[in-house]
Image 1 (cartoon, rainbow, N blue to C red):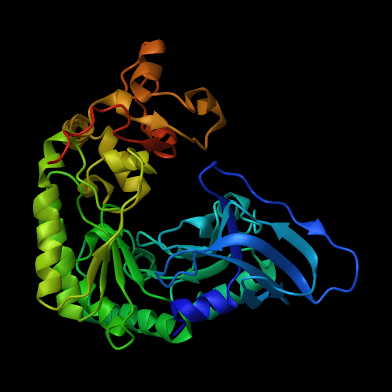
Image 2: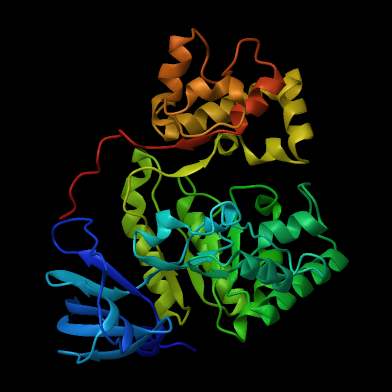
Length: 412
């Protein structure tokens, strides 16, 4: 296992400005005989071990840190004057969706320019491989190698992807044979190098997995001490129950737990923060290796279909669209969807970030409530006529929730 210290010795460097903002030092070519490819001079080095920063020179040769000292002799083929700046190992983003566009953008500059040099992908139950023979982790890794991305990439296996490949999009219990096949797929992915397993239990088909299924699929993680990372089944009104389920998976599978982007969604649920943290403290006290991560902004991003109830999405898109048109189910879908919108504070807390249909380009960047009002339309319908095909177009959009809501009261 790579330790923090070996990571410093073997890793790449990030140079960031402190405290002047996002200023990047530039490398200057040096004439004469070079003893290193690069020397970063005079920066304050924070090496990841927890010790205080030290002003040092850092040399790089063949892509690896080759020397560190208060003052390094010799020259680098390029040199960076990092006085007044921080020099640190590249950061690891443990919850990334960067695998979605590495094929189109292997340079991943939006990541690298933040100082991130390793991304962990396959998050929220979705991975680019299933663990089956034809779509194995090894095949995915070989494809990734041909791209030569600028970031190091590790991936979890998405249990929603696995369920979709074996069970499909239906809301039903996996058969014994299906569960055996899915478990074997997870085991194979672990053997080939996957770094954990993830779920997205607000999304289909992962939402249709039972507690017993999740425990069984996570058992291959146990002996390797690899984590179960979960976008929980609920992050608002049933948040505490969702945390309990997450802990139950880790306890049953005897594996570490990582709760992804822990939040208390909706102002009515903000007071649950103390109970949320208490549950995790209790789990750790009981011997479960339980952790969580958060992000430092006020909105979250997801597909617009997440506003619709999970039961309405049983069977995939065709069945979902049929329910929107069926008088026997349409009213219930609408009622439950509007209840979700109420939790997040209304339609103007839904901002359309991206759409896939060119006809809807004018919606990008707009709050859904204001956009619908400007068109004289019902925000729930999105398009005149309320046809199911129109709902499909809106379902391709992305949204941000909760921006603009009042901040929670200051905690004592």
